[in-house]
Amino acid sequence: MDANPTLDQLQVFLAVAETGSFSAASRVLNRAQSVVSYTIGNLEAQLEVPLFERSGARQPRLTEAGKALLTDARRIVADLQVMRARAKSIRQGLEAELSLALSVMVPVEAVVAELREFRELFPSVQLNLNVGELGMVMDMVLSGKADIGIGGALLRQDDALTAEKVGYSFMIPVAAPDHPLARIERPLSMADVREEVQMVVTDQSGLTNGRDFNVLSYKTWRISDISTKHEMIRGGLGWGGLPASVAGKDIMSGQLVALNLPAYEQSEYPLYAMSKTSSPPGPAGQWLVDAFKRRLSTCPSHGDFKLMLGLEEPHSLPAAAE
Image (cartoon, rainbow, N blue to C red; front, side):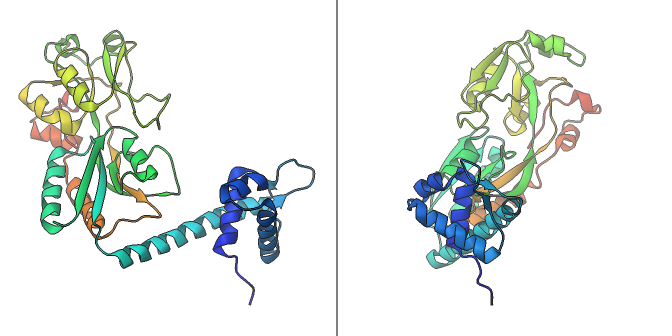
């Protein structure tokens, strides 16, 4: 029987491919460069194909075979990490502590309802909760500061992250009733909003550096969190987008007006439950993921909320819920 590549060989292969050199891989792996070279040589002998081009180049380059097998190596290593992590979860049993990171896009009512039941079912599990915007959820999960994250669209693909769609959300452009934009009784154009101050949340995680979402005005005020943005918009200091779960009640009570702004992207986008591939949720964490999935899958859509408010025209939608 032909000998199969070992996990160690595949990890060395990935390290060389990702760092770009045998010397860099040896530093990352804390091994002698000769050991790294020997391991790759053995792997190539077992597979009977060259993985790297070494002659005539200062740094080894992946061959066509190496490029093709790199994907397989990543998948195999990830699968073994999942297996090892699952065994660890079985061995350890119920978590003593669980860290949860939530996006502000998740409706507060859903959070309270699920955490109330969680407290009753898992009274011995200590819960640490963080709520934030944009890339914070993904950042906390990847860094190991949160065991589970419930947040918006993934900002980048990462093999270290496992994500499962659990619901959807969207943003609504709003302003205070006495704001100039709220008084315009027609669909707003780009010219209408360009010179009005737009409130924009800055991503504290740094994952979206240099990227703006739905920023239409020339004048912007950058704010660190959605709660402050909400209060400043309600106070008439500017206009901006708010999560439907945050703005919905204010719009229905008349404290905010949803702007009829066709240029503002309001399409639904998914919410995901995220965890590190190497650290899958234990029993309590998995219960939370399943509970949020059940709850968020029944939240009203744009159209549902329009019917709740008795609106007839889609463009006159004054609010929404997650």
